[in-house]
Image (cartoon, rainbow over all chains, first blue to last red):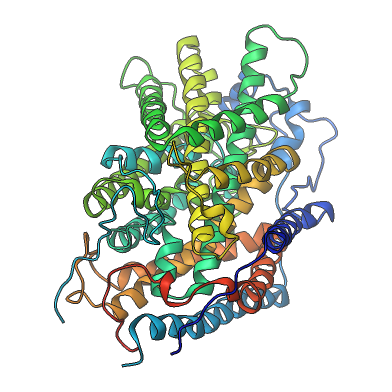
Length: 126
Length: 478
C-alpha cells in the first residue's frame, strides 16, 4: 500500500472537533435526564394510611434497626414499600439486542477495513 | 516463528512516537495494586448497595460473586494482553494493535467516560460525607456540598498534574487505610473481637428474594460496582519499571483483594442494616459501611469508617483522573483526538493538558446529575469495554499465537474465560435494560454516531502504519 500522509489539522479545526465531541457526550448523558426518561423510579403500589412496623412487614429486629437509624413507621413508609417495576415488552428487548449487535457489527466491520490499511502500510503486502 | 520480546523497552525520554519527553518509569507492583484497588475500593464504600435495592440482600450476594467471576476473567485476560502491550492508554492501545483503529477510538472513550463518571460519583460521595461530619460536629441545617465537590476534583487534579509517583504513593497509603478499616469493622461487629451485632437471619426474614429471581438478574447491574475499574491498572503500563512483571502481579493481587473486601462488605452491611434502607443509596444508605459503623455503638468505629470512606473516595477519584487522562492523552498522541492533548509536561512528565481538560467534564456531572445516574453511566461504559475484551483476546491469540511472541503472562483455559465473560456481559446488559434501558440505548446511539464521525471524518488526520508501535511480527492472516 502507498504511504498515507495525513493532512495537518488547523487549530480551529482541532477546537471544533473537541467541541463536537463534548456536545455529543453531554447530550447523550444529559438528554435522557432532561426528558425525564432516565432511570427506574420506585413507586409505592399500595400505600398504607396508618402504617405500623407490622403492617409494613417488619419483624421486631428489623423495626429495632429502623428505630436506631431514626425512622418511625411513618417516615420509613415510602422507603420500605417502594418497589421497582421490572415488566418489559418483547419488542423493547428485541430493539435493545438489535442496537447492541448492530453497534458491535459496525465497529468490527469498519475497524477491520482500517486495520488492514495499517498492517499493509506497516508490514507491506507480502 | 521465532519468539521475540514484545514488551515495551522505551526509555524515559522516548515515547513510542519518538517525542523527546515521555512519561516517567518510576512505578512498582505495589503502585499498580494501589492504582487498581484504589480506584475500586470505593465501590465497597458506596454504590454496590443499589444491587440490594434491585433484588434484595441475597440477590446482591449472588451478583457480588458472579460479578467477581466476570472481573476475574477481565483481570486474567487483561493481564496477558497488557503484559505485552505495555504502553499508556491500556485497553485503547491494545485495541489499536489487535482489533483496529475504530474499535480503539471507542475503547478510549469507554475508558474516559467510565473513569470520569466514577470520579464524579466519588466527588458526590465525598461532599455527602463532609456534610454528615459537619452535622456530627454540631453544624445546624443543610450544608452546601457543592464547594467540597469542586475542591475534591481540583485538589486531586492538581496532585495528578504534579507527578505520577507522588499521586500513586498517596493512593497506596490511603487505599491501605481504607482496606484496613473494612477489616477492623468486620472483626469488631462479627463477634471475632468482642460481642457480635450481626443479625442476618432476623433481618432477612420475609425478605429473602423480594423480587424473585428476576431481582437477582437486575442486581447484576450494580454488582459490577464492587469491582469496576480494576482494569485501570493497565493505564500505568508506560510508567512502570517492569511492565511484564508488575502489571500481572498488581492486577491479579488487586482482584483477589477486592473479592475479599466485597464479600466482607456484603456480610457486614446485610447483617446490620435492613435491606430496604441498605438498598436505597440516595435516600437511605449513601455510604453503607459508614451507616453500619454508626449502628455499632462505637464512636471510634464511626470515625475510622468515616475516614475510610473519605480516603476510599479520594483514592478512587485520584486513580480515575490518572487513568482517564492517560487514555485521553494516548488518543491525542495518535491524533485520534486533536494532537494538542498528546503533550507531556516538560518538568512533571505528566499528560497535563488532558488532566486539565477533563476537570470541567467531571464537574458538570458531579454537580448536575444524581448519584445513581452517574454510576449507571460509568457502569455502561465499563460494560461496553468488558464486552470488547473477549473479542480482543480471541483475536490476539489468533493473530499472535502463544509460540509467536513472548508474553509476560499467559492466562489459562483459553477460550473459557472469554466465553464466560461474554455470557456475563450479556446478562448484565439485560440487567441494565430492566431499569435503565433508555440510558443504554442513548449511550449506544452516541457511540454509533461518534463512530461514524471518527470513521468518515476524524480518521483522515491519523497516520496509518506509524500508529502500530509495538515491535511485533506481522499478524497471522494478513
